[in-house]
Amino acid sequence: MKPDMMLAGVFAKKHSFTLPLNYQQPIGEQITVFARELCAIENKDKKLPYIVFFQGGPGFAAMRPAGNSGWIRRALKEFRVLLLDQRGTGLSSPINYQSLAHLPPQQQAEYLSHFRADNIVRDAEAIRSQLCPADKWAILGQSFGGFCVLHYLSAAPQGVSEAYITGGIPSLTRSSDEVYQATYQRVLAKNNDFFHRFHDAQHLVTRLAKHLLENSVYLATGERLTVEMLQLLGINLGMEQGPESVYYLLEQALVRTPQGEYVNPLFLNHFCQLLDYNTNPIFALLHEAIYCQHNASQWSAHRVREQYPAFNYKIGKPFLFTGEMIYPWMFEQFSHLVPLKAAAEILADKADWPALYNLEQLSHNRVPVAAAIYSEDMYVEMNYSLETVKQVANLKYWLTSEYEHNGIRMDGERILDKLISLNRGDILR
Image (cartoon, one colour):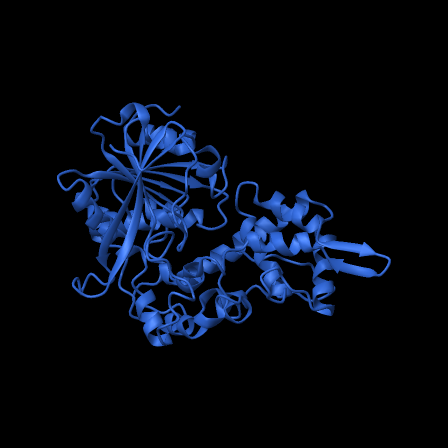
């Protein structure tokens, strides 16, 4: 392996592939898909199988590793790691309001419709046919990456030797409304935990909300900070160290001076760093579409929210954060989403999304699969994951309360080691 760069204990090589936007029209418009191959220095001359990593999201690039650590260290003991920038992210024909500006809304929506798990998996298989056409490879999916893994096992199991999922076993059949009904209840539980742990947090955030209702406050990115935007910070409550990040930010939100009270510029800068909607628009545009199979989402999270009126904040009532929900007003308030509002409306009404999972194929799955299911997961409903486990043959799982949704980021070496042991019938360590 001739590396393009060297990290601590790792050789890294860049790959770029030219692939069809629409695999039904393979000689039509093309996109670039980028992947970074990692190999432990001591293994550079060995022929090792690949393990491909599918990032969470949708709409986020693969990690940019600094060295041989975490789950990568465990994987590199026996694999070459391929970090895939899923189409539309990172260096893979990235999508943003500028890249789509030349298209009218209907064409923007048509273009975006090709960026779900089905085409991500088609990209992976096309890449395999170029990198190792005679060999199968292993796959690892975190969060939305787990959705990609189950689609892979539905559509192209012949390319997979073994599969791993962390915090990402979706329901195979439930509607987006059912998903959000479960998710709102999880978010309520996380709010209760948060305000119980940090006893002055409710006072801090209601004081801030009142200030926002009475004053025009603008973020470092130029948008007016609204109460409903403030509620979006709750997306961090289900992550390892997420509640702490939110609390420490709230502590510094308001500054009192003899001239009056104002919102700390530090808060206004850090707030933007805790939300990704401007920088990763696929997450907002296609998040509900990842649940759609022959049906439209029709702004599911927004509609289901009406079943949980406690989330509609009013002065004098307790403040609640929301979670991993996308709302139509976000395309009016986030500056980089505003130009994509019409496309978002078209996508929300799109009812001809193809099926993502082949239940018959999964019921006869022969690829060994091991999954970590986090019992306190705020983003992927545990009970729905356990339903899916019963529908997928050859899937073993580890149910744990030790980690939050992004546990692989915090203790990835141990988690992947356990899953590999589980998949291969070893005694869990």
